[in-house]
Image (cartoon, rainbow, N blue to C red):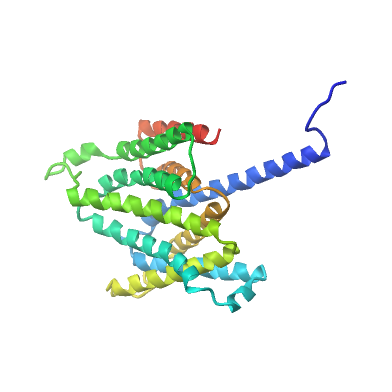
Length: 322
């Protein structure tokens, strides 16, 4: 008698559910990569005479406000508004203030670092946040990664370096009147290391908070974005910019706001139900989408070395998820 296991209506239904789950995660991943990758090209399209016409802080505040409004609407549709009638403890609320403070600190570090290094050096060195996130993910969340997975993350880091380095126009820099424009000071190197550490810490801490508390995700997002709006609103007010809050906002700017708000909410789903390492793959893949959109929309030329980071990221995904 031959017995064939795992065949029947039950197993077929289980396989359909498994494939349905994979498809949903695949669609979510692709959407996040597309939004991340289109961010820089869309900002370029908003420029007038080479300058961004709106205040970046105002844009960040509107993104946080959008995420807050969507979270409140989601909580209302799910019938969870009654949870707001019971004020949360100060300890619980403080745990949601930490990510907002960390992200606000990093946003200011990006501006500060420009005085100590050129933008290209920052783009290259900022890839170190892949390493910092992976180390903190393993240490703080107790997630033990296999050697092949560490190798995969190393390939992601190499892909980031390759993509950024080979996109630099070093020939033009060497022809500059004052010599090469690539530069970085010791203070700049220290700041970029702090930036990468805070970036990884913010992502890992947010994942820990979302997973450790048995609360609806829409309610957790509500707490997160209340602090996000408050801290970024104070930062925008103290910036001293004399322009009106919504001055320079065009249709493209509102598309950026909608996309970044959606991406933040999608990322909270990944951190709540998935893994923060997925975020690293999203960021790495978005570099390739960014390059392709810059070629298609802005007419920028792709380097022949473009295929190298593509292959590295593909190999990294294979090693990590198999």
